[in-house]
Length: 216
Image (cartoon, rainbow, N blue to C red; front, side, top):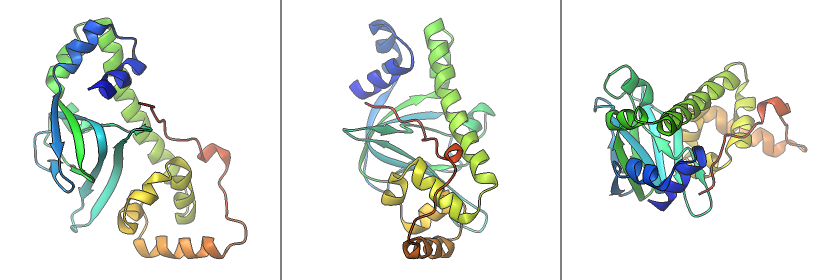
């Protein structure tokens, strides 16, 4: 819970009583590696904060293939995308279209979006907090869509290495290929080409702004 409180306070200068109020609606749960927190077709009403470990958000297309969307990481050194949930489906009052799994053993704090919304409406600070969380999630998604739209397969790979090098270290080759939207065979070919290149290719600085990270 201390990580969650610090994380929320970094976003908005909440008082101790405000922190106690909002964190009181979160329930602590432990998940074993491979367990699903959320599945496609479930209610999209749950909101998750990973306190330790790694979660993976992914979907399954009509052909049965997985598409990894994000990792949610919290360890003793840093946090990356530590909030998870099907934000867009909840907004439209629809069931989830994604899966969220424990990629490693994980400790997670869960809350209900509807209860959170009521808290957001109860004070100016809480309204600011809710807006900041949702804006960060939206901005992250839009940025990834924009910067990947016109890039070649090799540029996508190099970009993802710049944005979040941990993804390649954590994910399988197949999962990493899906997160940048290329075939696993293409990813293997690109890696071999880069190894053979005397000076590894780089991207323009405009493409290499890091995904925001929050220290615990």
